[in-house]
Length: 104
Image 1 (cartoon, one colour):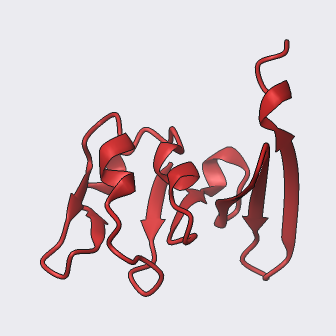
Image 2: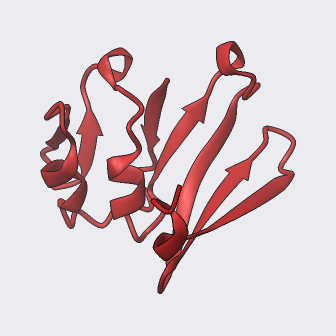
């Protein structure tokens, strides 16, 4: 698993750099985030949850059944919308209430 950073959507806020537990995200010369070694990404999704501009997505490879889909999040208060976009453009949304996420 690895992330993909859309440089067009990245605004250079650097929030993702501070939450990456592996310190894999860096600031490029243009001030925007990049990952030098995508294969080293743990797939923890911390940066994805932090990016409010949807510039970072998790690549869901075929090895985990994702068939090249990409995962992003959209936060609305206590609700986190996990958005899966398939290569075909089809979208799936999984809603998780933060208050219930550690309930079990």
